[in-house]
Length: 292
Image 1: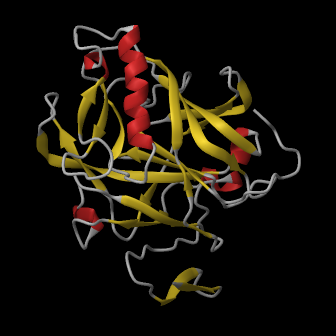
Image 2 (image 1 turned 60 degrees about the vertical axis):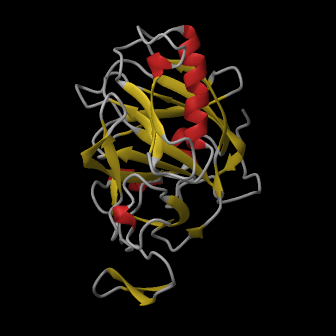
């Protein structure tokens, strides 16, 4: 796909269309560096949906991440997924934190898995539940299927640490329009905090709260709703997404990312349902590297 910027109309035009799913370019910053203050707009994500010609119909099937294109024209098709999940924290109500993979998916482990059921008891969340749930999250985050995610329906504290399969490196030591982390959130209405941490879980750089997302366009992406028992329901949720520049986290590289419920958010919705992947924008260490 080739794009051309028209300075008179301040829009992107598509000059040629490639095979597969083509998504609209937006002239606003996508959500990295100084552009994070811009609400609304769209984010260009290319996906493959083997079940359906229209990916908006893949609500319980594979929705495979293929490419991300930022507003400066940068085009990336290599992603970095989780290799380990650890340090899960949660002790809230039952059936309010689950790992879900669409029941018709071929990639991942289809099903609805509440955290309190992992140890076979189900009466509450135990330390064993938390350890086993970390593996559930890993099974949802170690591949390209976007219809595998952490589903939360409570503001009770939740956190986990994701270790990626390789170091995620910033393409530039300065803030720019290129995001190295792709964060998807169900409905795009809940805040979430992310921060780089070292192997001991200590914060490196600066915690960063994501408080807005963008619509995937032109094909809007959805995921099925499920009951507490795991049965698919008629309704669905729309995926929203944002790209995060590592500069926003105060680092130039990371291997471990802590995801948590933000505090002191003034009553904002903090029960984010999320999916996170790294984007390989660079393989070369940048200046002023922060190692974890």
